[in-house]
Image (cartoon, rainbow, N blue to C red; front, side, top):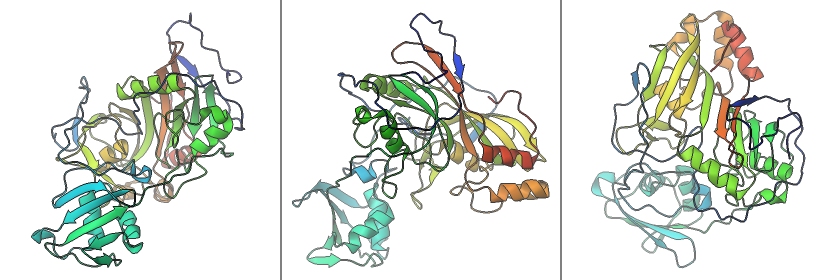
Length: 436
């Protein structure tokens, strides 16, 4: 099915990139394209953000003028065996090796079992914090819930108080029950469709919409909306929990995404993301003005050991990341509008790189912890708008790729959303001649 008003890709069309921008339409349940009989053998999930890592530390947050050829990543060597994660934990990638003795095994009652032996230097730490840090995959809130539910033991004693302190030599056994995640169902979730055919759908995700079900967001996600729009044929494409999804955007990042409607398209698009054959560009408002005005931010990115919701620049256990940036407009040296292109796709990559280099994104609830000194350089109107902006000012404005069936080069551009447009006007933004 073609989206109305969208030129149909044909095999004999020249490979010149075709721009497409269409008015929003209400998404309603409909029958999707036929499911391919080809079995998927590899899944690569990205977000504005996640693919294979490259070993070897680099200088954190390094900025350099101009761009250079990007080396292809190779998976980093694992330093320790990792516990099998439940579907709830499948996006929690451990960074670094546990410092205490830990082992993993199946549990007789089902699920898995983690065993820890507390080392002398770890004595006195809260048990929930200790288990979370040493597991490498479990968040502290998840561990706290398991402890309060009676899933942690020390010998014959059941530990139910997360604040209890650990002692040297303690052998702790944590039972992780088997997860029984629900298969996502179709729901009426509105989103803007830019292009659609029997193989794929290109859409403009609004800020505030979660891409796929996860703990705390089991319904009302983009996946639920895609199932309702495409029909039952979408279910299982690339996996039961994330049908059709080949890459992600953070909940409060707006912009363009592509989803697959067949197994063949899912495999081809996932491979293109993994091989970095996808053309992606973002618009962002940041505090202060990057110096130089154009260049690269480079640094290994890993999960923050003190706060699992944050990623950080690290010299140990991270994955190499490279962001090309260019300043489009500066506002009294207090803020800037920048365009960013991803050479890699790590979790929170743009947000982490700009924060690490002293220019956190305006409105970022995770990487902006205090009012920046640059705020005083803005006009009163601009300062108020920037300080009150409710999300990270980040928008995926361009997406280009090769159609997995026809071989046609497709290019889509989504203009800056209304909330970012209003922010820009308050800052003194002039009309953009060419965004990216």
